[in-house]
Length: 276
Image (cartoon, rainbow, N blue to C red; front, side, top):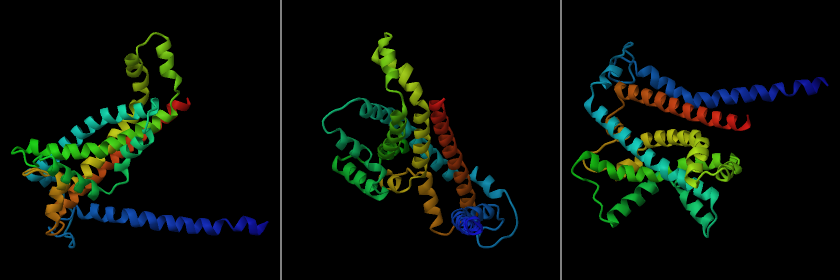
């Protein structure tokens, strides 16, 4: 009996140590990045004191602000388009049966597992094959090719989240609305869509973070004069990482973490509401 009570304490201590090492490996670089974003020196390897000036300088950096604006435009427009198409695709795949449904479903979710570099090259080749120029002369026209490419993978993520929610819904809700005299459109808008809204918002937030973070696809499909925030950051770190880039990275980490936490909260609220 004494041996049985003693044995679990040994592996638990190793599990705790292993977990601590894993979390340290994951988050220690972020902690160091955060500390050096307040470094008064222009060089990240030499500490010269605490300062807020690198965060203040970001607000006056026109190139950073322009790149941030481009990234936000791409992310918002791509997610808005993908939200509509992805929701309709998920509902259609859940409600209707047709020839080749499994094949279509597999192809629709293929961007989830294809490497970004493959999507970037395929999109570039497709644009060249159909003679769509990357540069439209104006920046907002040049962003169009990036938006089109981002819709592809945003669509898959949103559709996956919505389809997961659909599998947990009572299929008789919409049928009950139809029996009570509602049209199919009314049943979808007033019964099904409100139930799917938390999943749609969660999927949109996840896709927004992924779009904002994308570098490969944007760099392959960007037109002349158009640069997203990851592209601008990459162009600057080739000469060395400066404290202003550290500060920008900290802001992006906090923003992405907040959006991801919000998406998870909405998903949790949706699942909790289902079991009430």
